[in-house]
Image 1 (cartoon, rainbow, N blue to C red):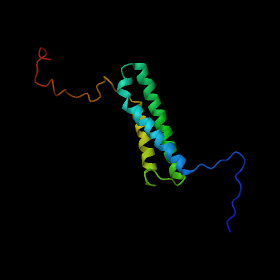
Image 2: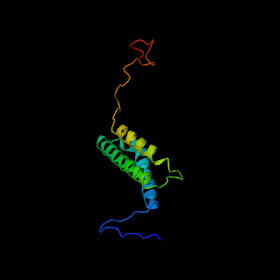
Image 3: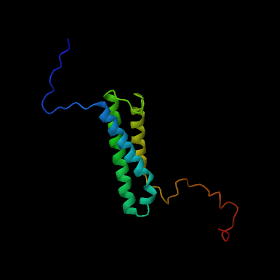
Image 4: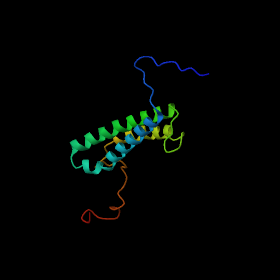
Length: 121
């Protein structure tokens, strides 16, 4: 015979299906914002706001995916997938804050200008 003890006041159990829906929704929101980053980059202020939104939404997504893994839920039929995806979300969130537009990060020779004189450029 199994006896369930009542939950302390204020504690609510969340079904793993609800966490799965939340995780999928957060992934969709983050992906959609990431897709439209080119549109937002027309204005520096909008681009910065989009970068911050993407970073925050990805970090929230990582937390929800970790919560899903700890609660024993599955994402797209796999109970292994949430933890690596949460790590990937954190990495992409960090990368979302990098603003390298218009900056020379390689400091190497431009292959298009090798062998050309200054007047040909």
